[in-house]
Length: 157
Image (cartoon, rainbow, N blue to C red; front, side, top):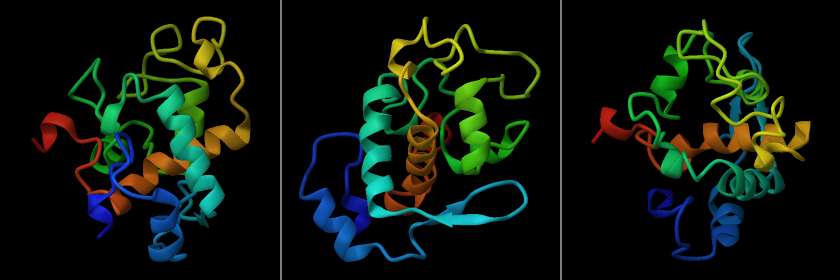
């Protein structure tokens, strides 16, 4: 079962084999934008997103939980509750470019890693639009692969 795949920790078995054998286009389809369009990720985008998330984001977001603020995680409930909503690819890309507080009022660009302040956050320095797309895809795919509790932190535990 896919629930047993550890996507942000030690690999229990061959992740690539698991992806190619058990994920169909329905499982790989995630929301693209607020208008309701969706996109189907390729296996290459899934692998790339996982690799980039682990390299650039997992220091603070291990398992999607936000270490610096356990009240806000990367679970779908939290992403849907943000203003503006961040439960689609385009919204997450916008956040990675120009992060705002959960209520959308304050800029977090000097606190949260982003591509706009890549001089402060070197891990974000060389990320392309395709990289941001893959990372956003990884975040939105985790509830389907692992559990809807992925990223929920103290909300679920």
